[in-house]
Amino acid sequence: MGDWVRLRRDLLELGRVVVAFSGGADSSFLAWTANDVLGHRAHAVTAVSPSLAVAERRDCALLAREWGLQWSEVHTTEMQRAAYVANNGDRCYWCKDALMEVVAPLAEARSATVVLGVNTDDLGDHRPGQQAAAERGAVFPLVNAGFSKADVREWSKRLGLRTWDKPAAPCLASRIPYGTPVTLGALASVSDAEAALRNLGFGELRVRHYGELARIEVPDDRLNDVVAQRAAVVEAVRHAGYRYVTLDLEGLRSGNLNAALTSGMGKGDGAALTSGMGKGDGAALASGTGKGQGSSAVGSC
Image 1: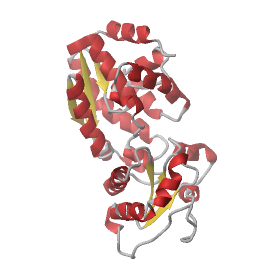
Image 2: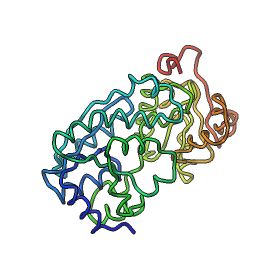
Image 3: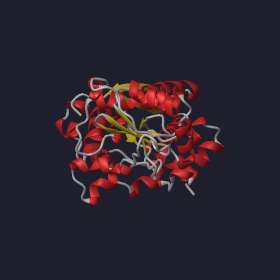
């Protein structure tokens, strides 16, 4: 169980902090706690870029207002970095490097330390962004205090934070298979498709981007719900620019595209991960629109 006393003590010892605040359960818990411990000496910063979903940006502003956080937005420029756009296995490194390029000077001006909401569960996944942040002086108070994702949610619930059960919402670029360039069109298509599906009642999901094909992941217990709303789901995803709409029968697996980094799969092998069945098989959704539909949204992907 995470050590709540140690977390507060560590933040107090840091004196002044700038919290990288994405609005997710981890960074929200850290931002709230830092504000509770340090007051005006804690500043929450939300990095705005095309990889941040509009709904997440909006919720950051709402949370900051609800909790009385010292908060501001900064704009990052990872899309101007060729190494990020190339979307190789180190993409997250360049994303966090771009974040720290903006946030580190802000923290330095306040004689503050940048803190990130990394938890102990994150240490077991492919997260090169943590290295980039650490290299530029960021620290991970939740890790130091032994907080897992479950601990963060439990303590958030105890404290009455509405983010305690908020579904994870990684950056939109994480929906694009490694080796496929990150483009504004791809990010917009993912964002629009996921927003439309949330409006249909699917709060926890991913739309994986394979050019003209979208692969939908939802928790196992929601697979039948997607099939039951087949027509609405297909319409929503096509409207976001996709030609083909598929449902992954393995369900939601956070970070599952990282498996391709160690499986020896080639650049084009990502399509093999898609569980698509024929039109008459109700267990999966697969359909195509006319040749010209959706091409502008997926662009060069």
